[in-house]
Length: 399
Image (cartoon, rainbow, N blue to C red; front, top):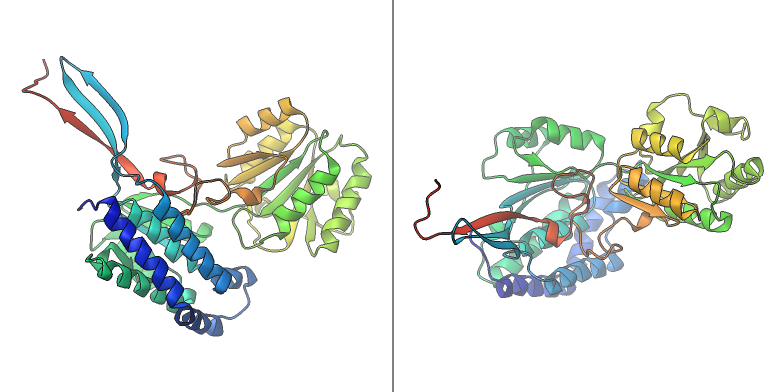
């Protein structure tokens, strides 16, 4: 694959910023077509589908942010001499061609493409059919920007394929394919992992937990829970499960207060059998699968545990490995929790809603990876490169 110089890539991004700004009404019109066709039986997906002026401003800001970041390609990772002067340099290098499969969110068409392109990768965008017109318009904008700067349109491609066609493409790609990122629910991830023949980097489900330790500040805890649960229910970093230490001061009274607080804010509360004895008006969880579920709705489960160890065991068993919070002023216990909970992001006294590229200082993100190879957490610009060794000799042979 041809390496583009930084100036050329940034010129494309400058063009894209201008095109997005000048063609707002065109994009809003395409999005309206998608919204008119969408049956609003899934509020979370509908929310992700909407483009408005603020969303367009966000798209422009994402492109601007990536344009201003340092080029991630060709950075020296290590430089050493071995074996009588043999020079070995390890540098960052593009993956090649990345495919992202995602549902509903048209802004992914901007963030995924800008990150992949700045990192000198081609990107294949397989968006959901619900965002068909919006994605087509955004990719048309990208093609205008590429053409203005003398580059082929195939740097950024929109894949309009049915489920069956996608399955066949994953098994037998018609062009080189180096990495696939499925960004969506459990069914999508399993579908891609089952059929793909190349590396898959999983952007996993949320199902995030918050543990209220016996040493938590109650007022801070309520505000963190409210933000994590209700700020944006369609996000993968939203809160789903709350575990309460049985020795929290005024445990029964605080459980009742938490239930009332959540109910007042429109959140349906489910409970485990132990908590249900104190909150008998709530629905008790009898099916273990609910503990694995990412709700993407105004709903949560409250459970009771007797120790931080029990909380960590439960989180590591049921969570999606995305984000987990401990509410505690006991620093030693917080460190124990954060070191032993197996999630991409672990928090002390803070909302899980901060798990995204912008909030964590990464900038635009391709996805939140819950894999451990090659990166966990927000996939930003610097995570969309691999590495390559450059070895310089002078007739060196190995004895």
